[in-house]
Image (cartoon, rainbow, N blue to C red; front, side):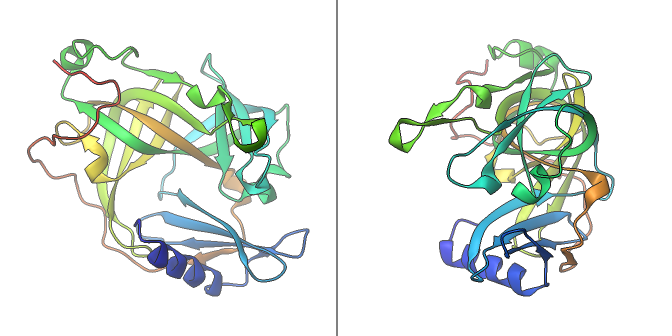
Length: 269
């Protein structure tokens, strides 16, 4: 949904759907949740009633849990609700930056230095799918079949000479489950994947048109650039409101591979 007018309408609909949870500055947090698909839209409203920020997220009926230690705060510098948090997943050797769907409301409640259970979702900007291990290994991709490269922890320059980290990483992994869902709140379809990667199994969301290669099915290998959104399961906000009902999930249909898109690493033999 790239039309700014449509996005604005969706945000205003989410704000009107419930009273939300109050923030310390007099604003409120509202989460619009489509119970059938798991799609969520999280909106921060300022004390003046204006929308301060809007962030998508996703919560399936049976979300994957990742155990991780909260190791640091990576401030955005402009928007506190976009601050990234650094994690150390228990079973991994890498750090990872994530954003929290409830922004500063969630970050202010985090037990820094302690280990917690998190529901972690990767939103894939781009994705390549390979039918089997041999195809993946012969592609020239510089990642192991299961690997996470936390590229977002390399700070990027922003306006004014400052730098900021991003809640992004390059991920490769094996597909455990795949389904096609329809977002009744915002419209359109998306793929929900469960991906087994280095040190964790996580939920992944991707637009069908963003996938290059054969249809995504269990057992196939995917790699992509992902933005991470997290939430603590025991702190499901009281601001979450029941959204519209959508069609039940269905298996990803078979079909021909897609072509003509830019590849993440540029070559497949």
